[in-house]
Image 1 (cartoon, rainbow, N blue to C red):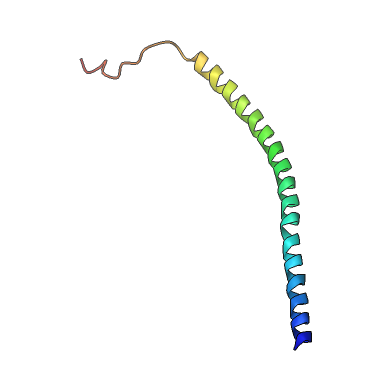
Image 2 (cartoon, rainbow, N blue to C red):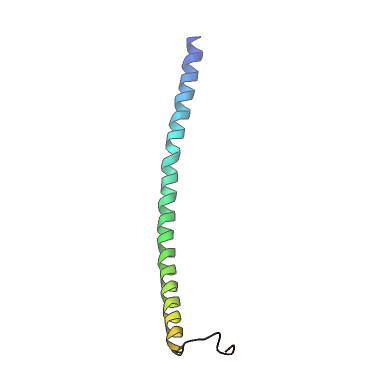
Length: 74
């Protein structure tokens, strides 16, 4: 009976040890993903800046006239 209990306890300890090692490998993957996300964020910032400059230049080309939607109704 004691030998069965010893074997079961060794198996349980082995499983616990294996499960405790799983999160460490997941953290390594998250660090790689974070580095990749930083590169994508820099690319998106460049695109956003170019879009903003295009928008600002388009707005500057518009004439400074007030629009009266009721001008033909009077």
